[in-house]
Image (cartoon, rainbow, N blue to C red; front, top):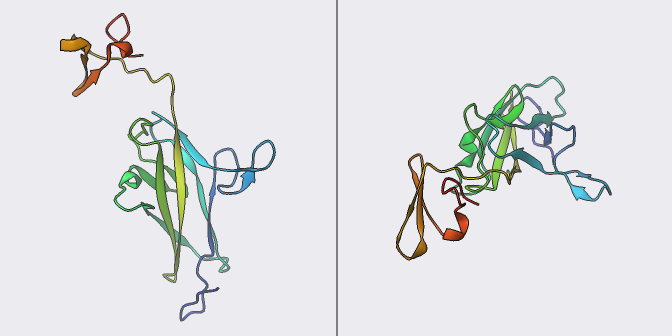
Length: 171
């Protein structure tokens, strides 16, 4: 189906996301060519680049602008992302935390100069940094073998099985 406006311009027909390794999001790849290519960013990487956003439009010389929305209701994780110079990335100063959110559902809308648009959803997975030990400021032994740990302004209640012998880090 082609959508046209009063100038007979066609709407964008596809939005592509090319990942940093050159793979195209949503296509098949991997060793056997049977895995769906997914977008991902490493945990704790401020300003991480997800990939390059491109548009397929039969109007060859058309220009496009991009906007981001959440692909899921009531999800505001998209506010951590931006598209600058066709690069989908985390905003400066933001990083992803796997323990808080393991993936982001982002809706990218491409709008052409005639006002016609197309939207597509991309899921960006967060790669867990397994070496992401919680180093804590102080541990207090509470009653019945529970510990309270503080890191900055955050307080955690921990099982004694999670507290290392140094009482300054968590397993």
